[in-house]
Image (cartoon, rainbow, N blue to C red; front, top):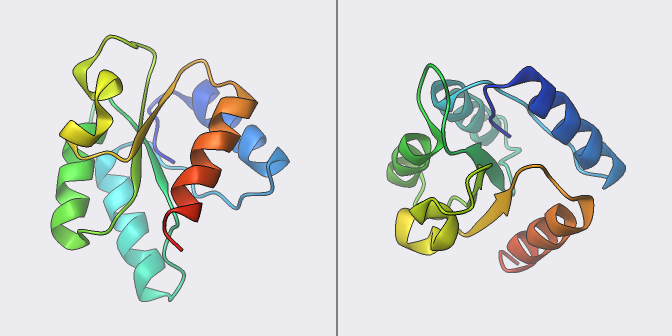
Length: 122
């Protein structure tokens, strides 16, 4: 999971733990790419990534998703934003994402998106 706001990272980490997911939390796109590559090298690839669309500094989620697709075309990235009108939120697949999840996060929405994304990978 990638988000540049510490409060969002902490909240999402708590939600993911309550949903029984193991999470790696990073601050920007560069860090998520490094974490993804390390997880693959360690034989523990991520099932899904949640990427913040906009960040104040560093690589944003859109650029990270594009870079990750070049590394691994099968990567499953979910776009996350507080702006539901952003084109990537309206049509995630047209922007390289498998789904979208709006902030503030609702546990049941997040659970459904993660379950569907992971299930479609099997």
